[in-house]
Image 1 (tube, helix red, strand yellow):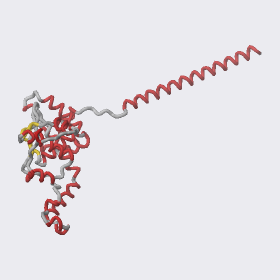
Image 2 (image 1 turned 180 degrees about the vertical axis):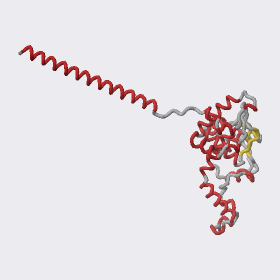
Image 3 (image 1 turned 90 degrees about the vertical axis):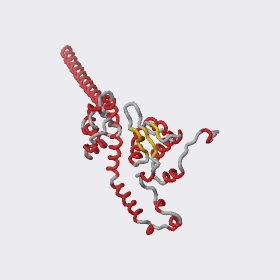
Image 4 (image 1 turned 60 degrees about the horizontal axis):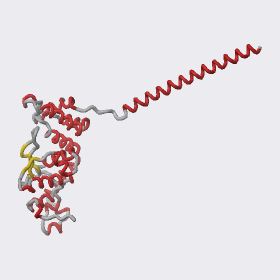
Length: 272
């Protein structure tokens, strides 16, 4: 039987923070990232700590790409703060942002706009203009979900680059190309190769982030093997062999028939 006791360790978190977090529409991965950061900071009576993508992935049993994407959303939403950026040898230092007024992830629930008896008696007509505005914004965001996904993808990728300069020089068209044609997994692998190559170079000789994403990334992409190409060659080779064998069999058969015909003719002459 598991014996969980406070004496074995606990994490001190303000009730006010927990209440505000409960109003946030975090997805499962985002919530698990927050829990893990709580454990690694408040759980050790500290406000911040160096936490890597790999560590978060192992602690939550979630793949790195998903962690990278959802952590970027938490950072963009000002729920998690970057205290110190990552270097080639050190993970970035993260902290939970206690100032919940700064949080930008919305969908905190209609109940957040109502109190006391209003919650029991509220109707659609009683919703204030702020709530209606929030709903309108949510509808608009759903319509632009693809563009938002591309931008979230870009923000996550940008954080991985060693020289984060020229961000505005990457056009929406190029972001869309990277998102749809290259893909997150291939691009991350390309950046890892690029970072390894650049780690011993002086900063002045490292290309801008915009330069990498606009053209240089192509030199670091892994070749995509065409599925079934080898099998197709194999079957074509087999087909040629089979056709050749069939032609040989036909030729041998024709030769045999000719030999039989000549033998019969010669035998007929002998008999006559």
